[in-house]
Amino acid sequence: MRRTSKLLAALAVLSGAILPPASTAVQAQGAAQPPHAYLFGTWTGGIFPAPSNLTSQACLSQPVVIFTRDLVLRATLTDQMLTEREIETARANPQGTEFRFAVTAGGSGGLLGGGASPQVGFGCEDPNVLHVQRRGDNEIAFPGCADFPNPLVRCHTR
Image 1 (cartoon, rainbow, N blue to C red):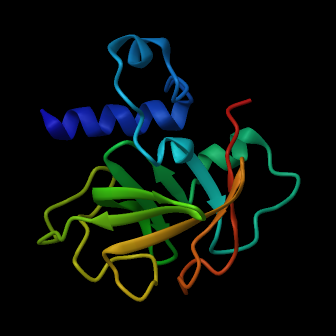
Image 2: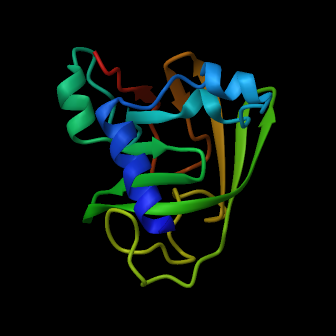
């Protein structure tokens, strides 16, 4: 059941069907958004510089990183499938957000591909920690992460 809900959430993000982070349903319940709500959606770049004239369709067809409430999915150069990391904690700081990921046993199959192993990270010092630096509304960076030397830009749905 949980795997199905993860798959549906990822597909909704990819198709642009996710409601904006400040949806009225959430506000009516009085629930606060997680500290990484500004990241929800698909991002490109990071591995290579993002093209300046990238269309929405091209960007959404090959996302590099996808942020959801519970998962961060990332593309690698050596695998066609996205690798998922389950978010254990997300903490806001003045520069952006710090993620700590749950350590996984690996190899059991992930949402859109192979399961994450403890060694799968973002090329940062600690594979289970990711620091996201917010550079603007539509631009972020992963400082100190060798796999993502360039900034990432948000894929727009239109």
